[in-house]
Length: 166
Ligand SMILES: [Zn+2]
Ligand SMILES: [Zn+2]
Image 1 (spheres, helix red, strand yellow):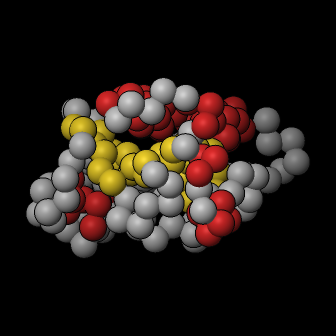
Image 2 (cartoon, rainbow, N blue to C red):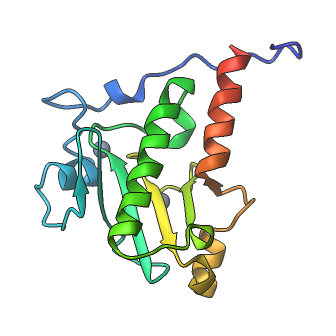
């Protein structure tokens, strides 16, 4: 209900802008190039929708990035229809942790940087573990309840409420 008269901006399908050659691939995007194996980065996991690799600047003993294989813009550009994708990304993150023997999921941070605090526009989930072993800078960079970092749960909640407002 938009009772307050504030309407959502028109939904811009980011996945169709800046995309070159193939659908869902942006050759100027670093993460698209990693997914496409044009940049030598070890892919730790690949399925039909998602892939995972290590963050080049690890903020915790385990720090993985889970990305959709198709170019999807940052979390601000998402809608309710992306909830399943975000949930899928979290599932992939959990699988990777399991594969690396991280069993305590209560000490893991799953989240996204809120624009303009994303260094790469391609949607990416940060998975950091153990959260209790993050250094001072990481604690700030991946801080809960800040205006620059949103947990996966908060994003899902936000997207669901966005859907209801339309
Ligand atoms: Zn991309
Ligand atoms: Zn980020």
